[in-house]
Length: 173
Image (cartoon, rainbow, N blue to C red):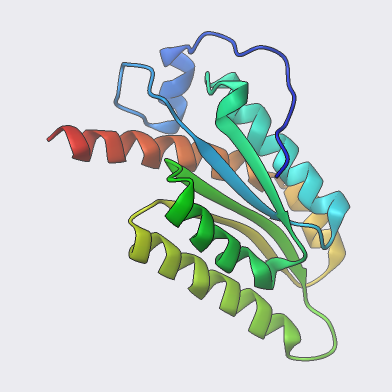
């Protein structure tokens, strides 16, 4: 497992935290695990970097972010299931990239990954965020990994903060 080394955590700013529609006004311990594929590394690394940056900007401590690498998108759900079972993270963020080719393999991998991630979330009652890009062309992935369409890793990280906050609210009711 890989731990991302970044500058020290900045204090959480609830004015900024509100941009992700979080209601909790207390800093929560958020242990966040990423499961990221090594396939299409330039794209996936940009997604991971964007997501980690957003978590850190919102006060998630450096030691609370774990990145686990797997060969490809197909392997993400099984790794997520094992981590949900053993590590008990507050959220799991899946990041990868599947680009359509000349065969139906794309559909099998993208659909299987999405279905597997939903199973992990429901079976283990852990929020699992699907940041696995399923795109027609490599240029589409580049546009979504820090290009003209933004960084979907950042978007998924904001959603992770929001769902983690919601889970804390549910637990406190």
